[in-house]
Figure (cartoon, one colour):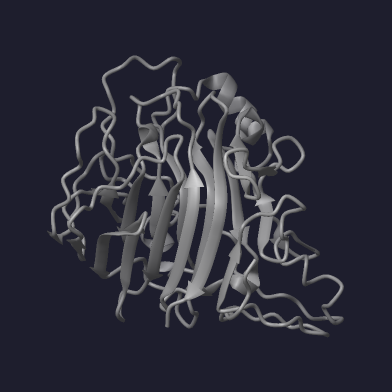
Length: 373
């Protein structure tokens, strides 16, 4: 495990302050235990579907983390970010905080899964579905999701997130290197069931969005690594306009067309817009000579993201896969920040998807984070 440098965002007031986190660090998930000084597992069901730390039988001496999505994660998992219980920040917080002092953190906002880019086939749903179009969310599943007393929706969430002291301001570039693999067999490759495997959120965002729409509005992940229909692909958000900017081969084996210039494969996530409403973003894309993402189905994939969000300053998202340059996205990335506050980038990795009755895993071999400024 490598710890060197890393900047801090957010205010942590401590009676005896811990050493500041490094500008560059990595976690290779040794089998001893999850490093809770880095990771918060509050959005994982650690009692019924805990993270497993396993030896790699194909690579002696190597280990990885396995996160499982199954019926136990139905309904999602919420984090308690209010006093007196801080589920994130607990490793450095409770015993070190002086009387009357608090660890300041933005309250967690649920993110919108939004539309899928993969075409939904004309198939009959297995049961009457909810408003999202998930064919597996019948009335019994919806009732069970509500009974979990978590997020209350027909979703499954099993995500690791960084502890607050590792969260950086969104307008500063940051590198994320991820080595992971997904299951070789996927139960449903036809219904475009929405499935996020890594996401970068912006918090806080301007309250004007909720005033313009309603209290049910929630921001989508600004950058998301997705796996709908078992297809690895990446989306970037310009406010309520979501654009697919990179993709692995589609289920029929065809190659998604990577077109440079103004991002053109874009769908509105604005409340009230009809499904599949096309939008025109303020995003420009440029591609490498071989911009097709690899498949992550049953294979280890190395992804690298450099992310800098802003609407008024330089902003860019760069994506590499297995050492190949895939795409660079520039112009207006993300949402307007809340007045007087500095937006931060919140990173999560794991499963966040519509309900599927299958048991699926993501194996994470390594995560590296590095300040790029």
